[in-house]
Image (cartoon, rainbow, N blue to C red; front, top):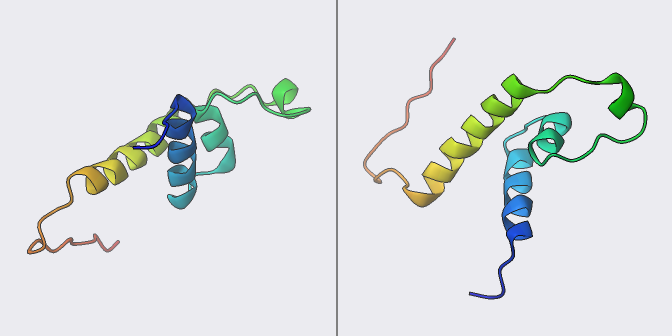
Length: 80
């Protein structure tokens, strides 16, 4: 394995959250990035619920990568 740094984990998580269509504000909040400009003054929402949901999506995706289901399992999707 080539040289690996902690920032690689942050980059991977951020990229996967984008792939999972998580909102930009939530992705940035998960990485604890400071909000730019006037947003940091007026938007004091903590995004706890949104971060919880996004990290749940990431956990499910990571599970698929690490332990994919057997080939003979069919995934059913709920229809509303």
